[in-house]
Amino acid sequence: MGTANGIEPEAAPSAAAGSWRSGLGPSSSAGLIDPGLRYFVAVAHAGSIAEASEQLHVSGSAISRQIARLENEIGVPLFERHPRGMVLSEAGARLAGFARRTMVDVEQVVGEIRRLRGGRRSQVRLAAAEGFAWDLLPEAIASFRRDQPEVDFSLHVTSSAAATEYVRNGKADVAVTFSLTPIKDICVEHSQREYVHAVVNAQHPIAERSTVSLAELLPYALAIVDEGTTVRQLFDVCCSAEQLNFEPVFETDYCGALYTFTKFADAVTLTGYLPVRRRLAVDGLVAIPLSDQGMHRRYLQVQSMAGRTLPHAARDFVTHLIQRVQAP
Image 1 (tube, rainbow, N blue to C red):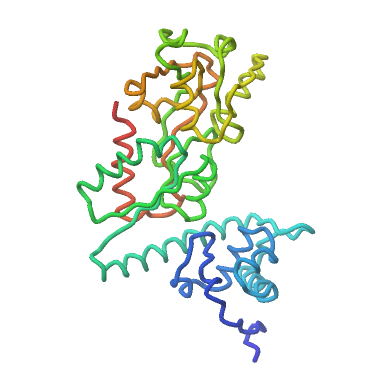
Image 2: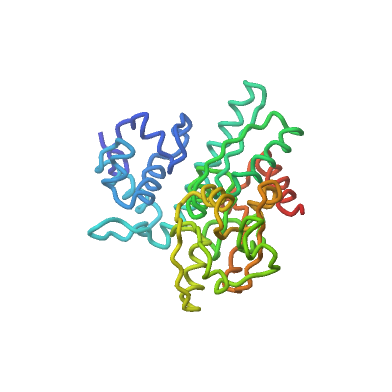
């Protein structure tokens, strides 16, 4: 039977449909969110109705009708239709931000209600670039839980850009990452310049230097992260501007491997100071500031979703983390 607005009622979505939530993971609270809003966010994330249909296990026609209903109610197109997919209009981008925040807020409230039955435990979901997962975050989590042992944590280690995306899409409450430019839909809870250093073992010829330039590193073996990281982006731009031609002896997407390699080889690697500051003396390594100004355009950031009120536990942890970051 048709409805007053001419839209046929949709069949109940499968369990998988309720679990999509813009990548938030399985949830039984999805029924609290309007189906049209969930389908809209799925298409915004996937870029096409066909891809969203696969993810949600809901027919493409059902998704199309729900999006048409939203557009009819709002009175403006939410997508620009292209042969290869769908791109959010300006109105759609605004609605997508609201919808993601709404989904996260609903999940947060439902989680808090459920935890009332189990001893009032809370969970803080973190995403971070690799370097912060070595010492900073484990130490911060451990010291935080000494005062608030009822708070649990999850940590996803990924690239800086992906960590930011985890917060933007609601997969994480807080991201600890490096950033080169302002990012839309992100609230920066804390930001400080993170200077790039050359790291060598204590026996390396440049170990006694107070500063060093990229040009002065040319004679030495270089181990460096591969493309896609902020350090590598700055390095490539600076080398291009200064016409420096390095031939790295070791490239990887795993910073830990670079650090260990430098311990055992007369090589140089490039990294921020904060991730390695507690390891240098113990491991017989030295961090030397780079003098190239172009290598200092990077910021350490603690990020959350713009417009969202963080749960109390996450807010308390952000305050605690910032204190740990600022500590000498």
